[in-house]
Amino acid sequence: MQEYTNQDVYLIGKKQKVIIWMVLLLLICLVYPPLQIIVGVVYIFQIYVLAKALKVQYPWLWALGMLIPFVSLICLLSLIHSSTCALRSKGIKVGVMGANKNQLKELGE
Image (cartoon, rainbow, N blue to C red; front, side, top):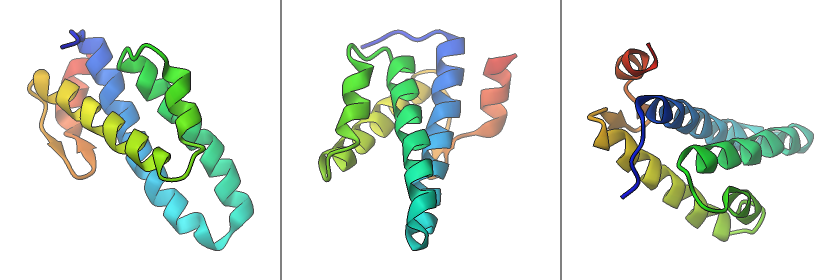
């Protein structure tokens, strides 16, 4: 299992929250396709940043996987699971919308 510093876990927690909000934003943007493209590009970049924070060997491959239907869902679920395990390894509570904000603030200080 990968060892993470407090700063790594803080970044993982922040990026996990961003990705969860981006998924919700993408669902809202279904009614306006041009906005969905812009949000999608930012979303893929955030996937890359989260994979890099998780110290995955090929983070660009995860971002590339987000372009393939159904593979993107598997990539997303796998990264969210890995980030949740990393957060819980440091004793941070993780709920539906990501890590506990107060516990993340304590790590970031």
